[in-house]
Length: 356
Image 1: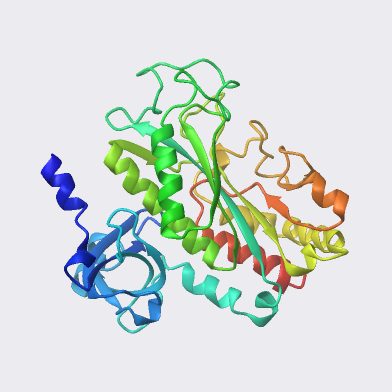
Image 2: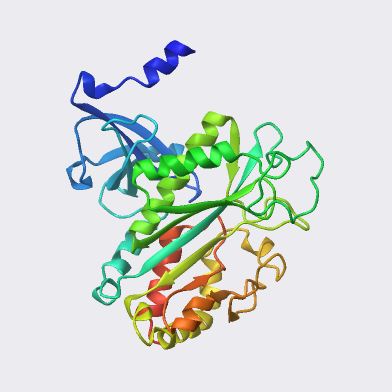
């Protein structure tokens, strides 16, 4: 094994200018990440310098076998924490050979919204809290749980420490450092309410970059769990019953919300979100109805309510925001398996562009 490790850790820049670029894209389910690598002359820092590439869409559920070619366009570059050196991870989106975005390409429409002058001038900030659950590979039962049985009830696990409370910290810490190395704006981690469940936060990031960063952070997490022989799930309610679900709370502010008098702007924005509650819920992740029950720190899926410091609300406004009369708010409705391109652009569209 030592020889294999030595080879994996070879520093290419000692002997060649060539780099390895790992092209990443989202597969046919909308949640499955795919990637493949190619050799390029490096170093490269601008995605515009990278060639477009293609993949077999019939094998990812994104194209028919008789016309299977899907073209991927490089959109954002990150340093590769696995291969290190000048090697890179490349977040891409997918198009037909004619240049039309394929149906699972949610980035294309999001980019249109974020480049709208009215949205761009508001400099929307996002902070996304990504919850996820680690599972044992063979049994698909939460990591650290007794096989086929349950641990003690929730209470000691949230931000807990100790071998009987925190399961998988080595994976979580590896992910944290790998994201910082990659250049992702990861702002923290914590153990969640259900044992074996964790959270990382990406942001504050501006516009579409928040979603590029979240997707690559998910990719890195899945690669690290692959090495560890553990499975990660983004299911919003992995264990039914008296256990917390998993969300992707999305914190949001605009330039005018962050300035004096911003609290009034926030209240108007929340009112607009309430008017479009059904459309947002429909786009906020599969299986969310299993999570948004009105219990376990959620608001019921059919009800829209907001409150200051209320974790049982659809939208939570922080005490600081209320006190300072400006700041941000948190949309608590998105599920852990939401597409950030859809959620972030929809929040911007509803609060900035939509005129009810």
